[in-house]
Image 1 (cartoon, one colour):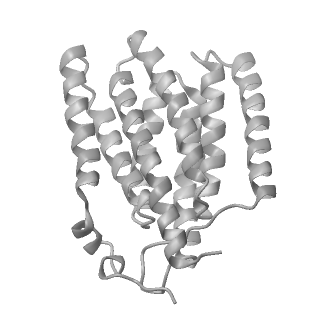
Image 2: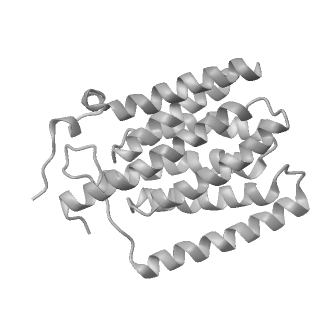
Length: 240
């Protein structure tokens, strides 16, 4: 029988359930971003705002809480604009044309998989092996397709990295809305790729790159934590 804690019953009470780890992620991103901005002399209010919203998104995502879609929507709009200004067109299209509408779809899907009608926490589960094979094959095909398009028809600064990141992101967001634990392994892969993308952009002097690189590193830390939190949710609730 599933149980729901008091912190699961509303979007406001969950703030009381913030842990020291959550505060570390938020303050770590904030202070590191400010330090990098001071050192590089390139402070970007837009990147800072988008990064803060996205950090809140992934923190709530790791908790399996539906508030992640609200912050994901706001963060995606800002990050899409940043990607476009940085010449990373595939990821810009991903955030605006794919990730934004997927926040609404994700909200609807997670509402159907809540622990209880009054809860805001989703039931998590593992994929079957055929589903994992489909996920992997789809990702490879998307990478090849996006790379050919970007390399031939655009002046994308990093076509292979961009294609890899957006392909993994598309598949991962799809996996996320169905509450599969495997999404966190995909997020880790994407965070590593995007870390490389932004480190290259940083060296090239792209204005938003420094803070975006810091953001990806904190994404990566949170994704590792998300694996263990979602495994705990799956074990405690016996989800299928």
